[in-house]
Image (cartoon, rainbow, N blue to C red; front, top):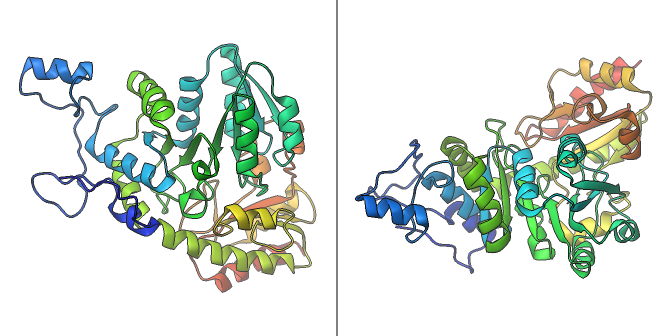
Length: 397
């Protein structure tokens, strides 16, 4: 028994109900199918299943009921026809590139992306003859100038991590399509609860489910969402053969996370805005980066394509790495780690962690200074967070 996507359902209902497939047991909660393979009634039935003449489960590397329920729900939330769940967010990006690109193709990417994504494009895809040029996320003229005859894919994060820069997704999608290119959007920071890239013209939306989809820092995973052709055929084909799959347990955790996603993203956003306003007024802070602030240079665009500012902000303290580390070490409540999207607030020094493996020149070009700190605001009381961050400021003397 299946609860199919109803086009009239609103987001919160889809997040709870879409994609559920009940077994003959009639369970209310989605089960975890911890099996590697599935049994066929006859040899002919097995052959038909493998050949695609009949639908059904074959092998959990690419067909598992729990993972399938998660994929259907993600597709329903992101407004896509198909979803492929992967073992991590980085695998989701890799699978997309490997499925949609070939040697000799060219990528134009925002300069303001996660450090590991930069390294994937330059150090690994480059070995297979796929070149990448990086441009200013905000500058549409730079995007157009960078497109070549062999450009196949434009890649962005918006808002970017960690500087919260934006681009007009609708305008960039139109630019990409004029040149015969695909637009791929990393939607991890907003999720579909706050922003729907496919509805704005993007071809593929990618989410690290490790972050807000899980919501409590328990699992690692990723998802690729798009059309039946690009994702349901091409990316799925790569996954079936190469196997970068999400486990049934992680899919089940992510399913449970989706049920509260909208509530959590609203709560993260409220707390982040209040903390950003407090930091902006602090005399030890040079600058705060948060799309929800009126002072953000792209605040109007954020209001157009996002429902709220999200849970991540960054700020520059006076001084460099030594002062930033001293600030971090003086805190007692927040967690010093490099994840985000957790109920627990996380403090990160990007220059030596998330972007520590890229060259100083690349970091400088992306605007990531030694005095930059990122806060992934959790669900604690904001007053307690202010007191804890004040400990960091006090430690600077």
